[in-house]
Image (tube, rainbow, N blue to C red):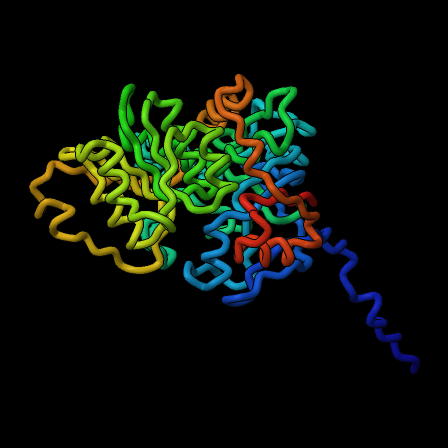
Length: 375
């Protein structure tokens, strides 16, 4: 009696199409971030998928590369996206596919306890995921980031901001992170009209802090920097005086420039014990140290510089403010010409050469400030 033919392997194979792939810069292990293929993200009702047109590398990404800040292996890195809406979640209103947008490096939900307390930057899962306070920094930290062909943006209605007509990708590329971070250094420091401000280090964050202090009304901005090209950009963005720490002791020189009074606000933008301590030592009594650095080890507060805790000093920290309203305001600053940060983009790479870009940026070669990465 004939037997039924067995099903061929082909007939039992699923015909479901494989998800489309994209290129992404992923964290492999300390010392290795590589370009590889990953599935294009699938979005939920409140999400958006944006096609990245320009992104960049941040100093925090270098901390990840070096293993100084822990993230999951296989995670896509990057948190500074400029792009075009490819697809919108079913519940997202107020946006359209094909629209040019940015999203902040910090992506608050808008309804957490931190958001409702007015501190949306600190909206995040915190130590539940094994990290200390990181706020709403999710891109390239707890979810896949922006150094890829596509990016899933959570809580799109809270975080997407349309790019005004007439502004290029590179003009708004600083808004998602370093412009927002640098400006927050001046804002949190409470800079007022007529204040004196010392800013330690004129890397991308410090340069944005210089521009922010100028906008806030500081009338004497002292930038601490040794690299001539960065000194020149600092002057363009508002620095009145440059202190070259390779030639003079910055604390002594700042105290000399202020006739021994000290500055009203100091901004630490490098993340080292040495610069943190110097920023504390140059404060006037009752002055404010605004810390922007990402520190890789414990800090020590020197007794004398802190006046044994009796000097009425304030030490404040900041995480880059995010959300669409913050992005709108920063893009308005750019659009109205209040701050021109175009000089910060010094190098350009296609996405396929991103490992080369990391090598240059992490070693600070060829006068690099920021690199524009274009998929």
